Image (tube, rainbow, N blue to C red; front, side, top):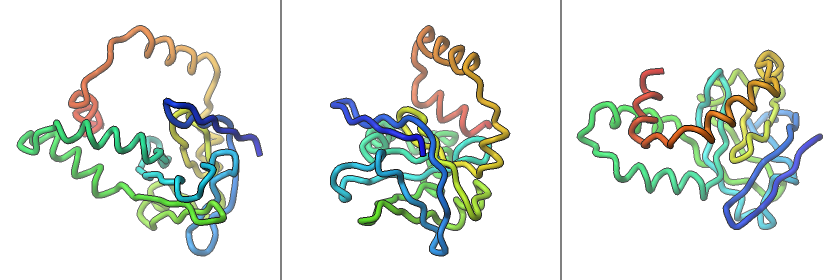
Length: 169
């Protein structure tokens, strides 16, 4: 196990990776280093991610997104479809006392998760991957540094731009 989290005034940060089993009740174990001090504070939203992964978003971060989404007009067809896609697939998750949470069948199928899952710290969120899918991603340090550089150099996109891009992909 190689994982750790950091709590700051700005939120939670997730680093490292961890592999665990998916049990018979479709539950996985969140690493203890990634859990809040109080189990009641382990509140997440699980979303389908790119490349057959799942994205585990801390509750406080997802609530910020929801507040931004309130500004999107339901009369905007593209935005409305993107919101429907997000809303129909999102799953709210709360950890039990052992730090486990269940994954719905639709999301398990999306990610191809069967017996094992790799939890990857993606700094602000956690990604869930089937072990063979994560092994084939082929992340390298150079690409990661290029992405960070691009993020730092480009002005932020509007939420509507992001939703429209997501709908097209």
